[in-house]
Length: 159
Image 1 (tube, rainbow, N blue to C red):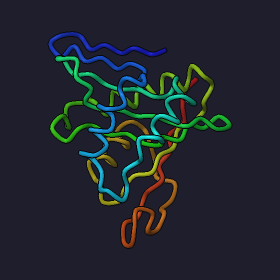
Image 2: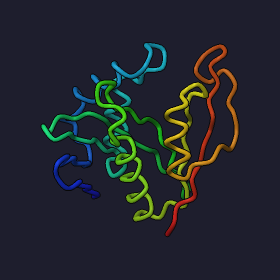
Image 3: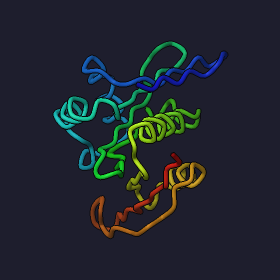
C-alpha cells in the first residue's frame, strides 16, 4: 500500500480507496465528465474490489476526497482506466500525486509500463502526462464520440 503525504502547509494524502469512498468518487466523476463518458458506479465498485492495490484517492488538507485514479494491470502493463480531480480542486498538483502513486505501486508490483487514453483536446492533461514522462503512441479516432479523438500515451516504468 502506498501513502504519499506532502509536508505542511498542504498536508495532502494519497491513499488506497475503500468502498466507503464511492459516493465521493461518483461526485468527482459526475462533475468531471459528460454524461456519455462517465463510468457507472458499479464499474468503480468492480475495479475497487478487483484491483484495490491500484485504486487511489487524494485528500486535501480538510481531508475531503478531491480526486481519484485507478488502473487495470495486465501482463506487466498498467492501463490507467480513469483519473479525475474535482473541477474546483484542479491545478494544485493532485493529479500528479495520483499518477505518482500508481507508478510507485506499479513498480512495486512489477509493472514495466503504464498506458492511458486522453481526449486530444485536453491540452492541460496532455502537458501533465508529458511532464511525467508519458509519450504519445497513437491516436484513436472518434474514441469519445464523433470528432472527439483520443491519444494513447504510455510511460516506461523504472525498476
